[in-house]
Amino acid sequence: MTVNAESHAGGNTWRSLPAAQQPDWPDQEALRDVIAELESYPPLVFAGECDQLRQRLGAVARGEAFLLQGGDCAEAFDAVGADQIRNKLKTLLQMGAVLTYAGSVPVVKVGRIAGQYSKPRSKPTETRDGVTLPTYRGDSVNGFEFTAAARTPDPQRLKRMYHASAATLNLVRAFTTGGYADLRQVHAWNQDFVKSSPSGQRYEALAREIDRAMNFMNACGADPEEFRTVEFYASHEALVLDYESALTRVDSRTGDLYDVSGHMVWVGERTRQLDGAHLEFASKIRNPIGVKLGPTTTPEEALTLIERLDPEREPGRLTFITRMGADKIRDRLPTLVEKVTASGAQVVWVCDPMHGNTFEAASGHKTRRFDDVLDEVKGFFEVHKGLGTHPGGIHVELTGDDVTECVGGGDEIFVDDLHQRYETACDPRLNRSQSLDLAFLVAEMYRDQ
Image (cartoon, rainbow, N blue to C red; front, side):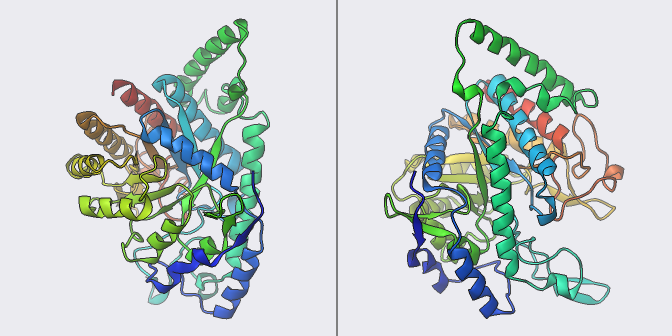
């Protein structure tokens, strides 16, 4: 695998175009110094790993696998501890085990992790008690505390994002290759959970089935290496373009550009302007690319996105992550899928059932109903079943911690419970119990396709 690569001006063609949702850095000289330093840092991921993920996503595009993408709404610098990272990974591994075994499908596992420190916002400022300050844009830009000092964008935070991402990836690699992800651990992932949760008990029953299947294979003399480790990839929204382009390198094997801040990056609903900087940046790199598509997306826009980002029509290069809302998915998605399929492009279709279903509770907390999340996924599967196309995956905001941010689920959380453990800095996340509930229900839908 080639690792020696250098920064290249080809990753900076976006600078002449309008860039939405960028921080208003007050000290441009300090920003230039940080960018120069980031350009000298080693890659966080390798080009060969990005190529491998593109191949795995190609299998998803062809209908041979399923993508599970999940993790924090916005990562925080004070949550780069071993426990928080392990809990997130544990939840995704459990969901992956459920989908693989109950859905009988290979699962490509991608975390919203090691780089998801930046958030697009609907307004540039926030006012409280007559005081107006810049809005919180994620730990990579400014602080959550409502003070002038905390809310002033600070480019030094971009270096902190790099180091936090490096520490996270280092631990994830250790967990996924060092024995923790061994399928014989399916019970150990659940020990803290089985007694207290209906979904934990359901998972434990599935783990016993997996055990029996593995014992049978072992008795037959089969002990594949794939049971001992897991492929796990990192992804985030490519939002702060100064950071992403500073971590763009030329791969010395091929001469192609790769954004080595993560294996896969996506362009959000608020930044996918066809004449904008984010699409220009994404078009220049060889990483797998995702694009969020909201309910106003037209078939013409989708086809133009394909032309810009996947002109070679390469399965696995482009993932469309739909975020329509439970009340719109059945109306808005069919035409998009029909027109894209008719064009001959093989994109990965993924359902983000989180972002279109947010509402504000009477307590002032932003939340989501688990039933709405589930209904959007159901709608997504119904549309693909009706068209004979492949429902490629789900993209969810989740945490491995026992938070109370989304209402409903088997271990039901009520609106009055939201304040108990509402810990997110931005959007509400599914907790571990709700995430496992979702995995079981998605596996059932997949089997019915």
